[in-house]
Image (cartoon, rainbow, N blue to C red):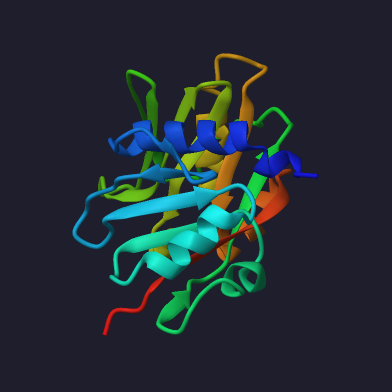
Length: 212
C-alpha cells in the first residue's frame, strides 16, 4: 500500500506546482513515473517515481549520460538496488506534509518582509538592514496542493528563526483550506520543518550518472 506522501496524484500535483514555481515544463506521465524536461546546463531531465517499478528499472539500465536524474519516493537502498556501476546516489531528501495552520510572526529586529505574488507563485524575501536578502522562499497553490519551494536562509543569518518566518508567511497565502501542504526537504530542512509541525511521510532518493 502506498503511503499518503507517495500517492501518485499528490506526487504529480507537487511536480506540476514545482514546475510553475520554477518556470519549467509541466510533468508528463512516463513509465509509471513522471518526467520533467528541465533542460538546464546541469540537468537535462528528471523522472520522479512514487514507487519502485519496472519503468524505473528500465530507465536505470538505459541511461548512460550525466544530467538525467532518477528520483524515487523511497529509501536510497531501494533505488540503489536497480543501479548499475557508474551511478551515484545523492544526499537524502524527504517528502513532508503539514496539517496545521501556520503561526505568522514578525521577523527579528533589523529585518523586514517583502511579499510578492505573480499569478500562482508567491515569493517571500526577508531583507536585512542593508537591503540584502537574508532568507527567501516560494510557494504555489495548484491542483489541490500547496507547495513550498526553495526555502533558503543565508549562512550569515541562520539561527535567528528566519526560516520559520518565511514558511509562516508563505503558508498564510494559502487560499483553499483543503489544499494539501507538501514539500521535499534536505536533512537540514527536515530538522527545521519538524519543529514547525511538519512530518516526514517518505524518503526521497536521487541518483544520476557520475560526471567523469
